[in-house]
Image 1 (cartoon, one colour):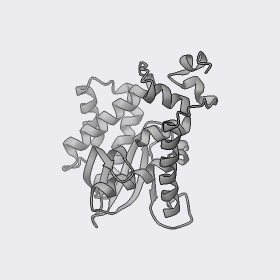
Image 2: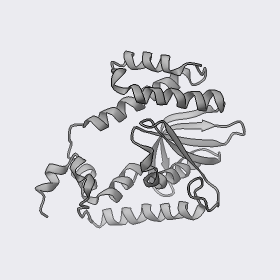
Image 3: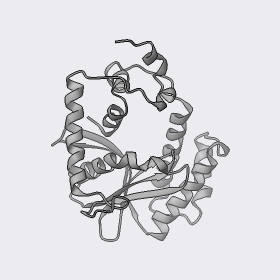
Image 4: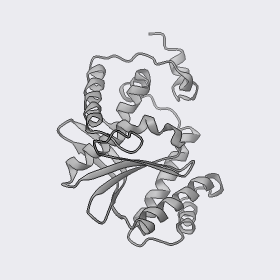
Length: 235
């Protein structure tokens, strides 16, 4: 089971079935393509300049975009946001890049996931960052996966993950939750919430193994890549 699979099942069990059980392939839509492009550019920048932070990241982000044949004008807003993020993280905060784009496995819970970026502070503590091209208004729906990042990274390394967050390139906002037993849910994630995340993992796995894939009809169905297939599916 992976973070992406759990998120998909929670959003719509039927979509989970089409994607992971039936393995129905659909052409990527514009939102998927945008996400892939922005992730790739961020990955390349961190790979090339992570150990040598640039005062003007935007210039080098544009170069990378052009080398990858990705139109700069098409993703201008996202490139400007990435530029601000890398200046903040690598120059102002002086974080170091611990790792990026890493596939991790937690053997205890048979769980996998990919981390976009792991930053290390001066005390050797880690903060996991995920890039998303959407709006920060969706942050509340991402809490579950941030807890999973902590579990994955701490099981792979003997290091403390003190926080996990998402950088939203659409509106240039970084939202980070710190793992402390504080009641302010806007800033912290309580250990009870981490435990609930583990429970959710096992509940989803149980339902998948039982073949439970009901449709979850909702407004966002119109944007689903499986909309036409689902509409004709009467079982």
